[in-house]
Image (cartoon, rainbow, N blue to C red; front, side, top):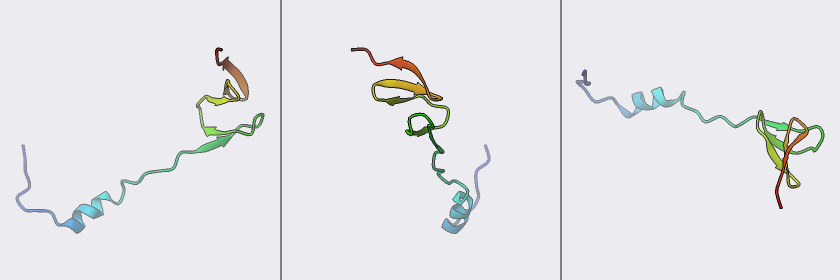
Length: 61
């Protein structure tokens, strides 16, 4: 396997890493409950699992 013949400088390494950025997740607000949640994810609201404004499942007692 090929290996580098010379050491890469810190600036060259950091220039390459400038494109590795963390992106903030996109947050949606449900129209029926007003709850903020991640897109395409179910979320808990008052003991009920909600998805697209509808009850998917209720928490068992």
